[in-house]
Image (tube, rainbow over all chains, first blue to last red; front, side, top):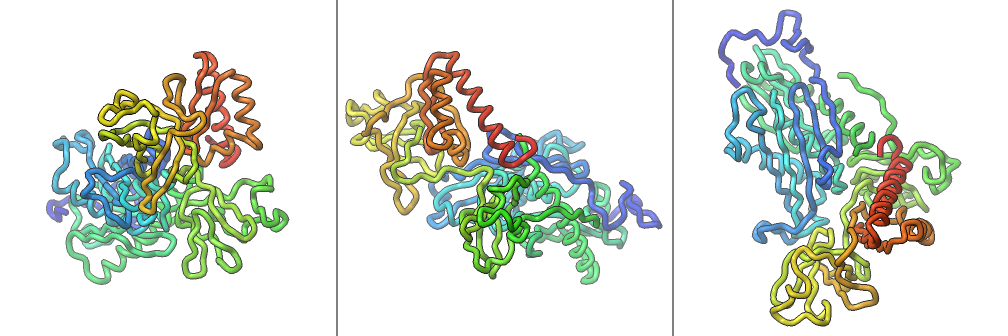
Length: 238
Length: 238
């Protein structure tokens, strides 16, 4: 969230750099079954983001100290490939990826019926192949579809989307320039069937009115993305 | 926001002339559901496998096909993990051992244990790896499933043995019914046509033993059968 420089991300007619209006979502496509050896997998292409999620398990939790007697644990690993951005990313985990893995696990734990698999582990691997902006949202959404594809019982699927503020204008689903030069962003994890919220972060400042506007954009965008998720799951794979 | 109106699987979408059997008897496209889909008012319906009743509404927990039989609404999942039950015939792999116990991967969330007393009779304390080593496949039966989901398997029984030849294939456990067929017809036909021994474990692992051509033929037949079953079940790509 830079907020510096003189990059104009949105013109006087409200058209953004990639030609979208302020309430439009980048094109989203999802496919399932992309990793045949996994129990469930999904690939999401969201704008220039390209993300693969694979689910393994439920399986015996190792090491034993991570076992929970009353439920399964979600072992989520979010990782960006070194070639996913223009600046090479040092391979391996860093503070950002650990944070995103943690918030993703917590968002998904609210929908997965973990109590059906006590003492076991469900491993979720999220790999960002190409990053534009909103990779944590793409990761959560892909992981959600992969869990459903693996046949893990869930009360709903989590759809994650981020809106934000660019030059004092609230826009839906930030792209790279808006993410870099904008003033705020608001990623949210939404349960589309009930409208419940399972994950929210905010970077930058939004007035209450702007927050409400970003919230509304996210809620509407979640419905569009959820349709694509359902289409991918019902449409067949392999 | 653009929203495309898709057909939603609900109880009231089921044609009345299908009776209680719903879509199963009909030639209509199957009613596919994704996790979180609202299946309608619970009313006089009971929630079966893969369905949860929340606040008087039925909600799908899994991806799959909705069935309504005798007032019980259930989901026939597209993918599922194996949950062991006593007396299940299963094919497992040795994953580890102590002086007198083998740990068996039976494809369930937890490894099963095979105590020396229930293993092959020639096993001796401290030398059990000489009889069954890590990586070996065995045909065994689930003897006991404890409250904490751990299970005990036995190799004492007719036909239970170490698998030293042939090939072990894996299919989704819920597709076993289609492999076996009504009264075992499909499986019998497969054995006759390929002149192979074919043993279908309840955990979705199928042991095929015979000459090489027969095994290859059986594997091809198995794959064709499952592809056909999936196309028939879900339509579109298998």
